[in-house]
Amino acid sequence: MTLTGPIVATRLSIQVPQGLSRARRGTRAPLLARSLSAKHVRVAVFLLVFGLLTACKTSQEATNAATQLTNTSQQLSAYYTDLSNQVADTITLNEMHSQLMFQTAMDSSVRTELDTTQKELAKRVALAKSLAKLATAYAGLANSKAATDISTAAAGLATECKSIAPLPGGNAIPDVVSQASQSLVEYIRQKKLRKSSESISQIVSGMQSMFASEMPAYKSLNRRRVEIAQRVANEFLQKDVVELSPALAPALKPFNLAAKLQPNQMTAEMRAMAKVDIQRTGETQIDEFAEKTSSLSAALKAASDQVKLVAKKKH
Image: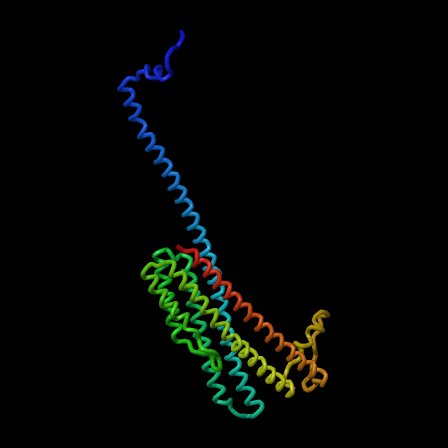
């Protein structure tokens, strides 16, 4: 068959049943709707998964920051406890020194100063323990119970801050810790999680600043204890009331030998050797404490930076 006429005429000659045409047109809208709906669902699922992954990552970072802060807080508490014990030893050593050298009681002004120092260090122990409680609750900041725990810990921290005064001869205490603690209580009440995290960051930063500003005082207290202990030890050495057998152990122990010293047989050479040991051991203790102090300051700074990083990411 040969087709003649315009092509458009051929197209117009094709008839489609009216009912079938409407049926087909009627199915296109639902198909399009289902297509768009499926697309929206895929987008929603993607956003949900992305949000969950982001939340998990932030939660894990908060947990890591909390763990680091808890460990650092425990180190800080142990540090202040040790320093307080050193001050107690310094008081005892000063009493011994006064009796040995001058046969008189310890100077009352020195005793008052050291008593005040010991009391202030006890407050810093309590402050470090409050910081540890805050760190323990920090990982679950978005949880309602954790929020209550943080609010309680922050209130306790603010109370501890108010009672703290500078160490005798030390610098003023930064007020940022107390202010941030009070703000944290309010932010938790208002469920402002990002602001709460920022306040925790400010608290840790303030604690680090306080520690850094008092580091010279801490080192001075340690040196003071070592030096008065050296003076008392040398005085006992001079009076020949010191057992030198332990000092001879490094030379004798490898051969299963023990020193056999008789009373009043300490020679000038042995006394000189003991004095050198007292001096060197004291210097080592001072150096080790200074290194420990610097390391703890760096750990506080690292914990502060970690919390700041989480605060920036929390939404």
